[in-house]
Image 1 (spheres, each protein chain N blue to C red):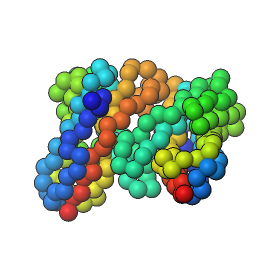
Image 2: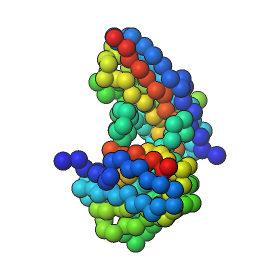
Image 3: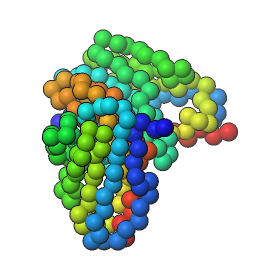
Length: 113
Length: 113
């Protein structure tokens, strides 16, 4: 069964600090992995997408890494801001299912002043 | 204007009532989806549609029905609402691709008393 596990479930950090969120998956055959950011009361928005051949992808202060061999991904947030407070969802898709996305449960991040 | 809109944004109803949630998109995408989100469970797929004539059940379709009135419109109905259908509902759209980015609406918060 295709699964996506995220850790930690929740995280509290001080403004300006860095943090790293983890995603482990068992989805096969792997197509791509996206990190979505979901602000409270809003729909998720894609931050990055990574395919099998990509090891790292950046979007501003967000940097995603992928190790396709160990089936692990991380999202690193640098110099956190209050606006980074949100849920971060790891989503993995498989080649044999064009529509279906496998969603993690998300990591809830709170950045405090 | 938002590319994916949902109405209503909030709804409180009573057990046994029929409820319709509506979704409209201006992105020109063929594929549309309905998800529900519950605390601690992440996003789960209810129904999806690849075009006006193609509608498919997702992993949790029991108690729900859908209608694809046009390429741009996809409605979700709860024929007889029950309290455990209280959740946040999201509509999403995507292009035809493997593992496509899905663009989410702002969500509808539904409470069934």
